[in-house]
Image 1 (tube, helix red, strand yellow):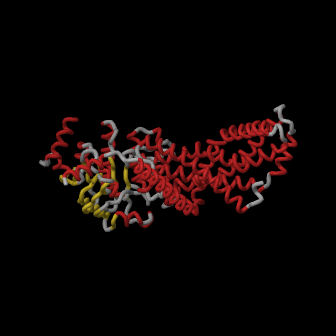
Image 2 (cartoon, helix red, strand yellow; image 1 turned 180 degrees about the vertical axis):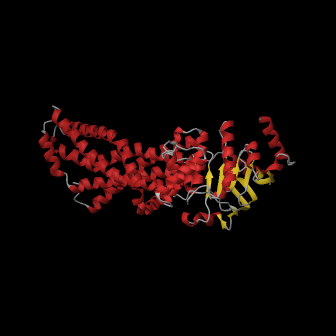
Length: 279
Length: 255
């Protein structure tokens, strides 16, 4: 009997095995997903009171704009430029006339939304997770609760609406600057055999409104994801300033993964509903 | 909601056999406590004895695993469910960190609950803020951001926030933590002033025994999750309970 209890106590003290670690990790992931879904539902529900929080929503939109416009322009410009340089090299032995459609479609449908999603996650999403995380660890959220102020309409809803509105606008901004970057390379790179007018003609011929719309829709979905993930990690922060740093990093990493997964899902659904959209 | 100086409504607190655990660690073990309306109770105890957990349960930020806490005839849960305008009395908490919202200036922090619940027109809210800040000797600081304030000033603004909603029950979590002796004296004087002017029910969690002696009608000593000693403020320093005596002795050595 004593031997059996000794075996049990030794088993209790032994470090968890690989299976246990994987199981615990899986449970954590499920818990975070559950918290994000619950926060999403509650936040959407509170959007009905958005009229009372217009000032906060505008403040968040301004913040997202000032945080991201500069870096978004720089990144989009160079993505457009490098895409033309790379594609022109690959197409040198075939035809460079398709460069317009290639850059246009890639920017509007894929690169614009994903790049903007990443930038907003990295700049605004991390700021939101850090802000709400600090409020949590320094009892500011508890103070709100003691005043009967629900943190979801007060904190989460304005950030959710601001990011959901801001990201499609940023996608459009990125599309325009990316295409402008491609156009600059076409105009000045001597190794490219097509003219700017040929490039733009090919672009407008192949790019239709549905393509732009799919990109904007992606931006909206990414905005929802980034805001909810950032708020959820902020609200679950514990452990002082180290905890805030952990939450901020996790919010950004989770946002990146969620954007890529959502991107795939939106593309698949878009193919189902708009068979003509992906040319 | 006309003036902040109006006498407080009486709030009695009844803590009945409250238990609370986190994972395997039991923090509160059947705590029982009664606080009369208008009374100032100080809760003393070592670090990690569950003092803060207890007052977070009184305000409704956490719920007991077992037992219940009543504020007058309502359980804390029932009280928290009531909308702001239907609440028969108001309860506030002054946090150890002050918990001012760093994105709002002092005036907006003080008026936050009034503005969010739209309980008064803007002109009246401005007057309440002015009056609340005057009560804590912080007139003319409404435009300042929390980051521009010292620790003592932040504490006073946090108290003004409680006064702005005319709190009938104010809970203080370590109100003098991280403050120098002069600021500690200031905050202590402020708690006494509120006690004398409005007579709200006050519960103060502190390690500061001299402060306890100055403001307490009663002192409860919490150890290993239980109230082990309960006395009037006057009797506290003459307590024959070994743990209380060791706390008093340690405080005298520190002085």
